[in-house]
Length: 402
Image 1 (tube, helix red, strand yellow):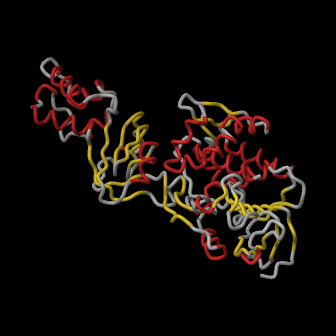
Image 2: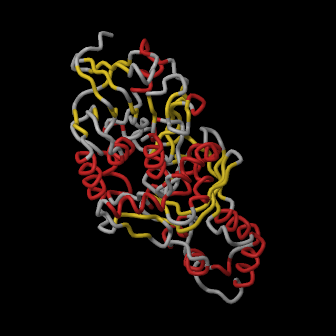
Image 3: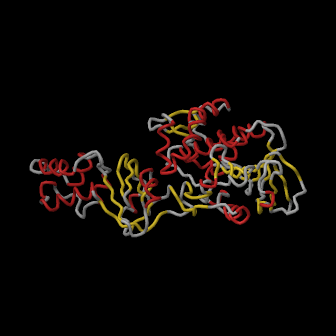
C-alpha cells in the first residue's frame, strides 16, 4: 500500500455509538477524522430504546459485571474506571440530562435518542473531528506493524490512502445491517492483521418455537416470567409477537438456545407448583367462573392468554378433574416448547462475537500486536443484556481508548 495522500493524528472507523463517544471525549490537538460507510451517523443509536435511547442503567457499577456473561470479569477495570455515574455526568455536561425509570433504565429526560446523537456530534465537531460519509475502509497496511512511531496506513473505497498515528475501530457488529453495522469489517481485520475473531452471531434476538400457538395474541406482554433452556435460566418481562417470543427474558436467553432444544416457560415464577394446584383445587367447589376467567383474575394473567390455554375456556372451574387440573398448572408453570430458531441479524439488538479479547490490551483497548490500533464497542467480543449495558460498554471502552 502506497500510503502518501494525507496524514492524520487520529482516524475513527465507524460513526456509531462507540465511535461518537470516542470523538466526543478526545480533546487532543491534531488532525482527526471519522469515516462512516453510510450517509448518516448514529443510525443504530437513533433506533436504540425504541427511539428513546436507554443509554445506561442505574445502581452500582459492580452489579454490571454479571450482565456481560462470562466475559464481564475481563472488562471490570474498564467499567469501573468509566462507570455509569461518569456517563451520566458526561451527558449532563453535554446538556442532555438523564432520567431513571423504576426498572433502573436510564434515558434522556426528553426521551429522544436524537438529543443524545446531536450532543455527541456537537462535541465531536468541537474536538476537531471531520466526517467522511459514504466511504468504507477497505484495507489496513500490516507492513507498518502498527508501531506508534510509524502510524498505520488505510485504503479507502474511493481509492485514496491515508496515514494515521492512531486508528480506532468502532465498526460495530452485524445486527441491523441496514444501518451500516454489517460485520464486513471483521474480514478486513482478519485478512490484513491476522486478528483472531470469535464468530459473529445474533444476540438479544426473538426466539421462535415449533407450532407457535400465540400468533393472534401479538402484543400481549407479561411483567415477570422465567425461561429456561440449555442449562440457562433468565427472568424478566416477556412479549408475544405474531411469530415468536420476545421481551427481555427471551432476548437474554436467545444466545443459549439452539434448534431442537427444549424451552421451558414459567408464567408464575414466584409461586410453588404444589401451592398453585392446591389453591385451584380448594377454589373449585364454590367457584362458578369459567376456567379462563378464574385463572386471569386469580393469577393476574392476560385474559386472552388464559383463554388460549384451553379448548373450551368458558368451561366451569368446578367441572375440572384432577388430571385436567394438573395439566392446567403444567401449562402455566412448566410450559415446554421446541426451539426452531432465533431472529437473525435483522432482528437482533446486538451481535455476539467479534475481535477476541485475547488480542487486546484492555488497559487502553489497543491490539497487542498493533499498539496504535484500538478496537472499541460492539466490534469486540463483548455483548451485554438489555437495559443500557451495551451502550455503557460502548462509552466505557471508548473512554478507555482515548
